[in-house]
Length: 404
Image (cartoon, rainbow, N blue to C red; front, top):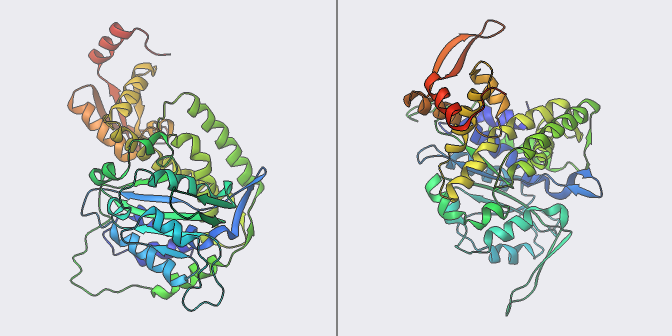
């Protein structure tokens, strides 16, 4: 089993959404690897550190995956772990020091740190510069040495900085925690915004079912991953797949208004995730086709959430752009009709499956579209959206055009 599969198996009785545990597992891998592994990219090295925020309404058990990741990384004991209520200046001061962790003889000389917060809004003491500093530290491939200097304060120098972050928040608190300047400024673009709206199941915890495997199995696997060192390489078919996907992404970027910058950084996210997925499977540092495919699917799924955060911060309706996208597709489509699957494949950068369902239900309630279940070309049942004829006529009368 891969490390991610071990985590998902270990937590299968938890009510927390599976995607939360998936990203918590990858975040743990990112934290323990530090700058020991990297992907060569031109004249620089891309490291696999990631920022992850688990977002959802209160009661979705967001704390469980965060606390599991913190426990696992602490148990491996290869990097500093920061939790509780902290200031970014305090973290920087601590990262600048050489430390020897308990039960280890080798000191940690690099500025490696894992920031963990089950309540992200309460994690960082309110500081207008905090997000800007975290954004700069995230880009570890640009810094072998990072210097922080304030008036009347000592100069702090961080050697080989490598920061990973795992936090959780509901939407209301997240809006308070992330200032507007973090939208265009880059923090949101660099962060995996992982949304969920339902628990994965129900478990009243009245029975002591236990786990099928001991926690020590997860720790041992993560410790083995932490010892990997060196440069990643691509299997030929993985490189070909990524190159083709990258080219298609550029076409999407050219025709999409994304104020968060998430799409511009999506290729970095996919490469980082490919490294982490690969390490979860094995430590030979070869990125295979299945690693890239999983990374593309996982990153495409969270992309709409980052844009949603940006719209919330700017005081706009998070569903309005997606609604316009679906309606415009139905106007321009020669049949004025499209399947749910094709919609998701075509507009993955605008909404995920949950958001599309909400958009469709809203349009259905407004009688702007109809929904039907029909057979697709290979005979499987599929949901189709069709625009209301009157809505179509009104749109053409107002804006002109029609199928392109």
